[in-house]
Amino acid sequence: MNVPLWMWFAVIGFILLMLVVDLVAHRHAHVISVREAAAWSGIWVLFGVAFGALVWFLYGAEFGQQYFAGYLIEKSLAVDNVFVWAIIFTFFAVPREYQHRVLFFGVLGALVFRGLFIAAGSAIIASAGWVLYLFAAFLLFTGYRMLRQRDEHIDPGKSQALKLFRRHVPMTDAFHGQRFLIRKGGALLATPLLAVLVLVEVTDIIFAVDSIPAIFAVTDEVFLVFTANAFAILGLRAMYFLLADLIHRFVYLKTGLALVLIWVGIKMALKIDVYYIPTPVSLAVITAILGVSVGASLIATRRTGRQEPHLPADPPFRNATPEELDALERLWRSWRARSRGKVPPAAEESVR
Image 1: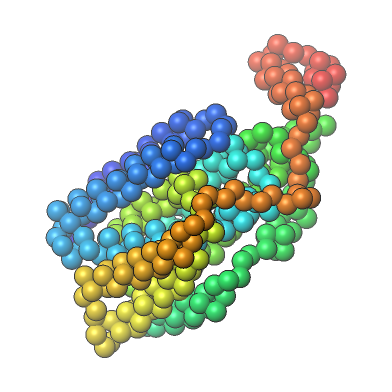
Image 2: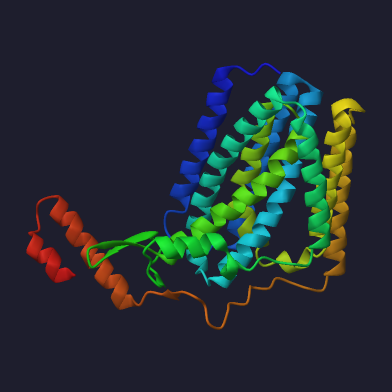
């Protein structure tokens, strides 16, 4: 698959453009409605499918099918991210109007980290083909572990990443709107929203360790691996707001995801020296597994509607009071005025 350099730049440029559009569209904090989330989900899926159709048209059915197989794997595994995000936001009682900002920067970081993982994985495979055996074994083990632990959930309060963050980064105990950092008494402090963002990034890196080897099982083309990842990840924010209140209904999805990982692990192990399973067969198997797990889940919970997550009775962080927010806003205005040479230092100290 010969991909010209301009196509790489075009795809990356389009991704950055859509991220800017998304940021501008959600620059004001507000609760994302189901209708808005559905509209954005539809837009992201349309872009992902349209790009796959373009690959199919330009490079043929085989590469088109490889892209769609990778896109489907990444999109389905991303649902597990949604589950974890819901647990994190619920545990820390993050106000719903601030969640989009966390997820925007979380997805931005995910694109960067996955790009690095893909580059590293491609280089390792090119220089040491035997590493595919390790990838296959890892996928089989991960699928088996997910199958065994399908009813278990993470506990954000026990996260080592969070403990390290709170130990080494000065932090307030209250959310201050959408801000990740504030100045208080002359000191720069992190808000709980930044701690939540760090936790979201760490969990995505952990998930990437599973998903990147999985997509290399269906395609060796770095361009397809990256674009399938990118278009799947771009729709994660909208998917979260669409599914956050329905997570309790996907009771068999984790079983389906575990079987998908086991399947791609088997495919990777066989294709090294034994037998290459055709891409259409692999795509059909993945689609069937996911379709059955989602369908069975919805049937089993057909009498259950949307349920907002139950917030903890004693959340670890609080919302800043109106007085605290007003003082912070006045201080911010004072600093801006001082930076323009309009406010003497004494005025700033009086605001503190």
